[in-house]
Length: 238
Image 1 (cartoon, one colour):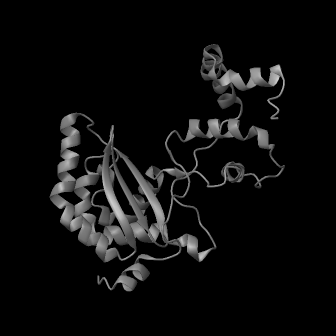
Image 2 (cartoon, rainbow, N blue to C red):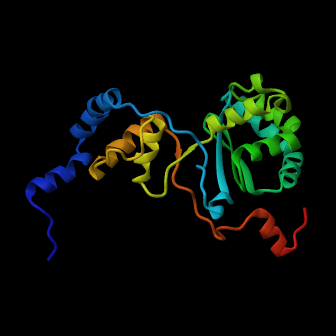
Image 3 (cartoon, rainbow, N blue to C red):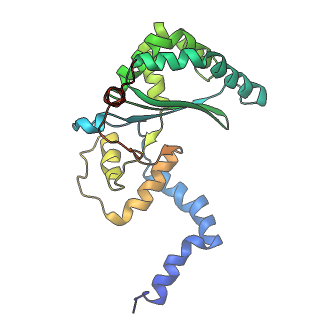
C-alpha cells in the first residue's frame, strides 16, 4: 500500500495549483527572492569540456532580435535568407565542422540553430571568413547589427555578440546549476554545499535572469563523431 503522506503534505503539494498561491508567488515571493538573491545571467553556448567526445556535435541556438518585427520586417528577414541560401549553405560546407544548420523566424527574432564541432570562437571565425559578406545582409536586420558590419572587419566583436545572443544551455544534470551559479558569482563551486531542496528556487531565479534557455545538451544519434568522420564514413566529399 502506498503512503501518500498526511493531510499537511497533501496540502503543501497542492499549493502550486491554487490560484491565490500562484498570485502570491508571482507578485510577492519571486520578486522578493530576485531582490534578495539575484542571479547573474549565465553565458550562452556549450561549456568547455576536457572530454573529446563532448567537443563534437555542439549546439548553437543563436537568437537575434529583429529591428523591425512587423510582418514587413519579418518578410525582409525571410527574403534575406532565401536570396542567399545557396551561398550560406556553401559557406557552411566549406567550414567543414557543421553537421546541421537552419534558420527560424520566432516572434520578434530570427534564429540560427546549428550543430558544429570544436571550439565556438573558431566556428564563428571560420563562418565569417567564408560567408561574412553574405551574412551581413542578415546582420543588418537585427538590433545592434549595424555596429558589426562588415563582420569580416569586426570578427572578435561579432564573436562576442553571437556568444551574448546564444541561448544558455541548461545542464543535463539539474544539480550542476548550483556550480554554474557559484562560478558566475565569483564563488568556489558548491562551497558551502547547497541544499537539494533549494534547487527549484534556484532554477526559478535563474529563469528570471535567463528567460530563454536551451533545455540540456540535446539528443545525438551518433555521439562522439565529428562531421568529417561522418562524411568520410559515407564517402561524402567536401
